Image 1: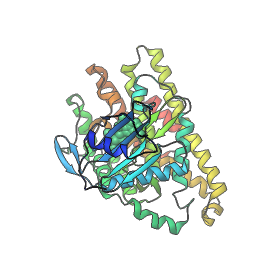
Image 2 (image 1 turned 45 degrees about the vertical axis):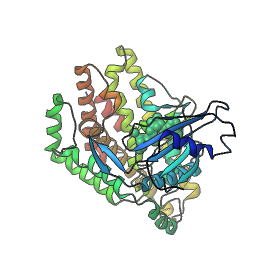
Image 3 (image 1 turned 60 degrees about the vertical axis):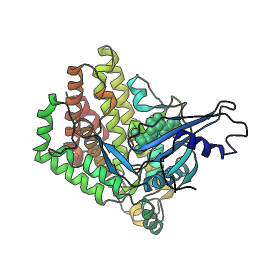
Image 4 (image 1 turned 90 degrees about the horizontal axis):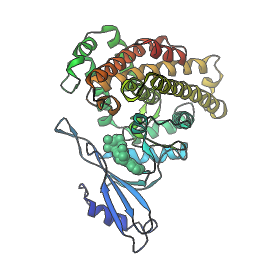
Length: 401
Ligand code: ADP
Ligand code: MG
Ligand code: MG
Ligand code: MG
């Protein structure tokens, strides 16, 4: 234990040396800092003798936001390590193993997943992951059902809520996803070429009503323990394996926010294919793959969630009341569609963008991808409370140009 300070690579190696079960005496340890440095340090430490390796993630006490520092609680490192441990119990094999957590240094030591790729990058390169829909639907069904009032003791849930009070990270979401894109906020960031689209968001009352309702639910609906930042940059993947990382935004919120996060990022990928596929048939094929993955994620999630409810439901009335289960799943689909739209729009006009679109070098193609993302996002938000089936989401994507 030592007082908090950001570690350097030499100090990270010294800490790793104390892990005798991973690195035997005589280990030759190398360390590289591989994080992007905005919020957290990530050290990769490996032993060139045995080949063993680990990851150390340390929270920084601030976020660098457009050049300025924004104080940010170190407690999010505790929340992240606790959420990873909880998710690992509910969805074994779908998150990295946590070896230790040191509160004084806000430091989590975990399994090295360097043999996987970050899914956002994998998709840019045209990777296909046939097991992903199965894996992520299991992750979602297990982690959401068993932390909700349907699947866990309702008294224990109220107590458990206290471990995941995460006001500062929730505030980031509340501002950057559910407020700033809909007004002329300083944090917004967009290409001047699409200023007309940004300004349209600032005056679209019907859209703002839907976003305000989704925002209200994010603020108040402690439905289940969410990951809270489940985009394709928080997923390590191979054709055989899926690992969810980075749950520092975890809190008890509306389930559709996590499901929508995944779908939104598959749809920013969809829009970006305008550049990444060389020809029309390849683009159509990749887009069809993405849409079938989205449909599979929802369909498998729903089937798994219903099965868990049938077998492990703890709420007598919720299980017995005719039509309640169908109504619950319908509302969850509607939330999912609404949050999908919100998470698409913020990636184009808000502070944090996505590489599959921002790195399109051709300005005309990039603008088309941005306009398509916004158009789909707006349509989904306007659809959300009327949706009855995932096919309406798919049809909306297909018919939006
Ligand atoms: P942040 O919260 O700062 O976004 P992440 O947890 O997403 O941090 O990690 C940032 C990067 O560090 C990841 O994109 C990945 O490249 C690397 N990384 C994080 N965790 C691991 C891990 N368990 N194994 C290998 N690399 C990792
Ligand atoms: Mg990052
Ligand atoms: Mg991350
Ligand atoms: Mg993070």
